[in-house]
Length: 542
View 1: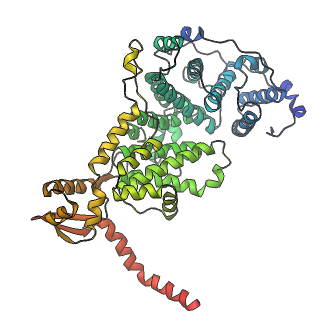
View 2: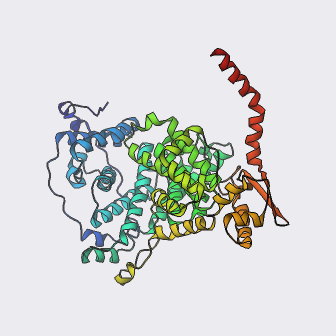
View 3: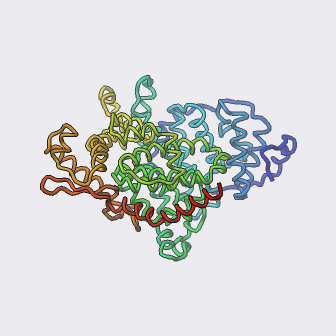
């Protein structure tokens, strides 16, 4: 047993106990990566003194990877590595792979996994250079080539959390590269030349190709479909899909594609990727909390951008309720800060959805929403200067959108004129908000009457009667949305989502409580006697 609070002398002898093993050499495949452009900028590892504590850790880490000791790897990966990072490498990178190579018998598979952690640490704690971004991409190519291009399933098992982090970090670094690629200000000529000469580095095609290849290799969609119909997943798993490594990488790649397509702005395709995954507590994504949160965040955001506000509210409310009930476990996670930030973003998105589609929420979620965004919610519901509030919340809570194509480095002057992907998507969202800016005001007036003439309401609102008719028709149209009932996430029935219904006949507006509002009213009437009995009992006790 390896403990994170070990004594250095106790584990000094572990080096001698490492089991030597050799993996088959990496398959030489054409991944479209021009290594020459990267090798030319490869820097030689700087000789640094590695503490004995780190040597013992790396040796023991390597041993457990060789033995596929999932239980011990889970502790080493999630707890020990992060504690040692805080102690020794909080403000500097870990030793380069070439320096620790003698400690692990030059095991190329382990060194590839180590480099994945090495570059992830640079992205998280330091500032990656262009060379770091290139080398990290090259390392991911080596890792995925080893997994995907072997003649037989590789003899490697990793904890689910690590497998999710590999996919998650792969997409994050792709996203980060796309966003920094357009910022050429203060770039040196050498860096610009590297970007121009290596367009395949972190290309959208290569990233999508990896994710789809992992899904195909693992046959995860076929497995999920069989499981959905009540069968055994192993029946459709095949040689590779029956291995936990391939199965979970394929599954997490589906969630990864949900995220990538959402970042690209294709929300329909993003939800289409989830056809074989059911959003419930038994789903595989619930085994890894960050994956659980990510899934619901991007599903909810896709619904929001598709104007399916009721479904977005359901998605955000579900995961926020789950996080509230399991909060004590998240505080112990090394990813607690990331989970907390994502939850805060979902509360911001939920506030916008509630303003656009008033809905009853769970009491705890409602209270937290009021605490965090009560002022903004009130402004959006009143319709007063709400556009700026929507814009601020959207900018804070939306994902960092990316463009699938890089800039034209042969025409640097045109790069500064290209609109950021965020501006494009924000313009689409805010244009929809502009079109329904009058709805909160109309709703507040209509709730006060049962019948009212169009001319009278137009006088109250100080607007033309014909323009009011247009606004009323828009209100009517916005109150009917496609809402998921069952089946795939893209399916749904057209239903009324408002607690207010009306019709226009001979220039008169007839207002009635909708089925949604009547349902809550009928529930109250059915239970009013019970409430009265409880109140009487309490008064008698006092």
